[in-house]
Amino acid sequence: MKGLIKRLSEAHGVPGSEDEIRSIMREELEGCCEIEEDVMGNLIAKKEGDGKTVMLAAHMDEIGLMVRHIDENGFIRFITLGGFFDQTLLNQRVVVHTRKGRLPGVIGSKPPHLMEEKEREKVIKTKDMFIDVGAENGESASKMGLSVGDYITFDVPFRELKGGLFTGKAFDNRLGCAVMMEVMKKVDTPHRVYAVGTAQEEVGLKGARTSAYRIEPDVALALDVAPAGDFPGTKPEEASIKLNKGPVITVVDGKGRGIITHPRVREGLVKAAKRLKTPYQLEVGEGGTTDATAIQLTRGGVLSGVVSVPTRYIHTPVEVASLSDVKNAVKLVLSYIEGL
Image (cartoon, rainbow, N blue to C red; front, top):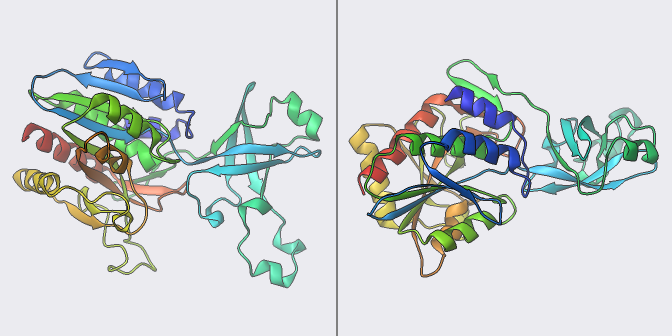
């Protein structure tokens, strides 16, 4: 499991360019599932059965950047793909994915030594940042293969920390992908189970919407990450989720503008956790949502819920999670499906 998470984390795939993750998932699931891809780029794996139709969804894409402009001096201006807090971007190492291969670069801005006092007090905005790949000028950048529309990801390796924790980029949502693949390898049920690696979740839940319409599930679970708040500066009433306390069952996210989990699904997940005697946490979230929001509104409506892995520092290149929470998420989802 740890090796799979490392491989997924270090792979690259922003919304609409999920090829590397899709290839890993295909390789992992071939032999145990029927596999196909659709026009949106979703990977759909299926185990046949004659019972209910169950859909698991885990988005493959990570937040990233895209080249918007290359100036005459060879510096890159960019847009964000997905939700960012500007301060997390500055001074990061990145990889620019060009037609000639990958280019290493760094995100820079005017240094404090050259700023006026008032400038130093302000948060530097994305529009004032640029990427330096070492190009001498615009012509040099073009010869390197750089082009408007190239996508950009973070250059961050997976690392183990103490206490069974690990850190890396794109845990949102490669952890959900890892959970989903492990479930599909182990699930034993009379139901028909679909596992969908969804595309373009970070920019509008797009792949979930189209794949759910096609599959017409009776019940669906989005497998994702939930923001943990067990670090300095966060009060329990603001974010009560903690690492090593078990997977997260969503009650509500996005203040109800996202999903309000159907009581039958929520109660079924809680019962599954209690059967296993495994820890779990309940989430009532104010911000953010998951693929389940789109799935539940498909056709005449789908019984939907969310199981997440608690993760610190979500939507940064240094997310932190616990292996025990990942393993318990796999057990919870298996127990829920087998108990339907």
